[in-house]
Length: 310
Length: 249
Image (tube, rainbow over all chains, first blue to last red; front, side, top):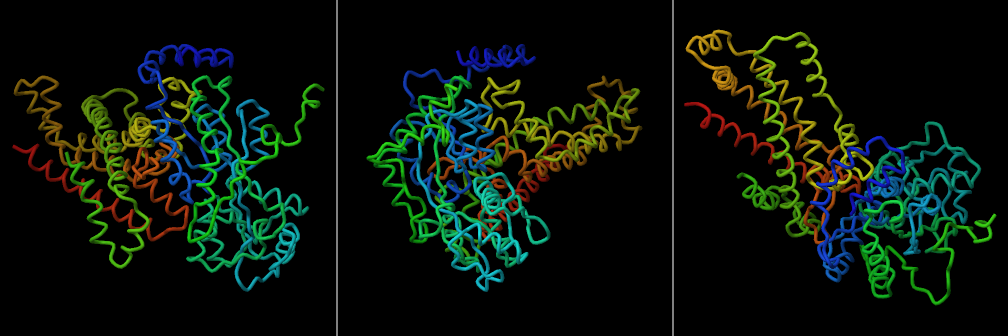
């Protein structure tokens, strides 16, 4: 059944490999678990390094795995790569933190049933002597502009991750096009980027969770706070979760993905997220449970049914 | 098989060799974690190298014992293959096994089988090339003697393999070294997955090292690196021993 569906998709895509798809069909039936219940199935979750590396998912997933008798394969990639993997039909669900990219993913039909999950925030960190003099600034864009004008070293992730996307949005909002010797793209994860910044006495944008988990090993300090500590709202870092659209990828494990979304947005698990601490500090703030309706979480930002009719 | 003892040995190695950092490491490694990534590393690399050897050695003997037009070209293709960047091989295998790819319906993405595929592609050129050099180095007189004594082509090939055994063992070890030390392709096609209780599904020593380095935990990464080196040394020692005992005589 799964192979038939895959063949249909290949056919509609006008791909020339229909024969290959048919040839692989028998093998596909051999591996597909056609069980009456979900027990024994695997849910493939692509997510970001910042959720994975903090250890949050390992902490909470055991509960889901026991509840349904399933396995969650969490694959940590950057937000861009996590969405691309899902776009190719190689994962069942995504948990990422770049609303613009999530919206594009939904608008292109790949993602359905998006929920706001949790948030933390970004902070601008740098050497304690603060050569550009940004400490305590209430505006992230002003701080970045000041760094650019001082040509103080700044380390960028440069990896199409959620943090990198946020950084580019901030430069955009600041009206500054960063470039020059002082601006370095590392193309690495947050932990490595913090280490590079630490070695070079540079500024960087970090999610608070990764910074907290690494603070004891580096000399950088928080110079501009995010909204959790009263900083500007533009540094908010919201995480969303979406199921892969089974209408696009028929092999997506949609049932289990929806079970996962229901589970992780339930009050119990939201509390568990709230209770999760590293080095004595809370890393993520749940936001799925609310008395008030929030319709924007289900659709691309700014979408309304009136637009769709036009 | 050497797989089980080594998997059990690895945590002991850590406790013995890590020195003052043990307390820090004891906190960051969960029970069974290191053993399971060692087991996955060995399973994937040894399987890939075994399959590569089954293809490469006969291919090397066939190429080495026959003359045909374009032989030089075939050799240079094989030699070029030794330099394939592992990330590129990983991407190619990813396209093949991805849901959109020709093997998509087999659902091999993020499995050990996909990792074996990419390491097979990586290990085959060095094993073929080095075996070929070893086979070509066998004295012509040995071949001729085997023929004169009435040997069939298979007999001649076996004699040549026996003469070239040290070179072939080196080839297999080179292939194993390439497979177990590469990080690019297994990260892409395997996904570096562990279960929530820290038992590896597709995480190898190299991808675990990459994960630690990504988080700036360089000391932990170094310890895993030491485990990897110890593992490669062990496998080398076992193969050399086995080669000395098993093939001579």
